[in-house]
Length: 207
Image (cartoon, rainbow, N blue to C red; front, side, top):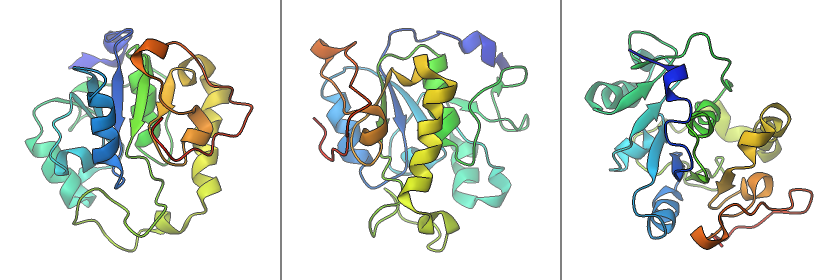
């Protein structure tokens, strides 16, 4: 089993895409792929896999036994699974204080930064805004998370600036509400520039 410490800076200065499950995933994914030939792909749960994308890493915090789609995806997935449950993971996460939270998206973004990704692109993070919740069919239609105010979702991501400021500087949101938190993506030629996060970043476009 791989130790999480062994993944430290494994992909230093490589572009990494963190793949969420929102309906904007496909458009965000191709926005980045048109600009970077082979970014590293980190999937949050099973959503990207269900949408037909084969990631390099799959990050999930929940026990798949309670989530049929997640269970099947984890069973069939041939890449590197990252999970705190030893019976499912390929990476031993013990001994490292990673960014944990109520969502697998937070440790997935943390992992991308831990592995040295720069830039790190958040793709498909719509934060349950709008009528369509996911990039693929088959999910429950009554999850409590759908009813949470947008600001509740944003607060969890904003907390990362207090805990991991150096990591957060490398993250960009390709579209959606998290552009307010991390700023929009920059072109490869602009790599290294950081947005003025003291301003208003309520941008919906992909730059």
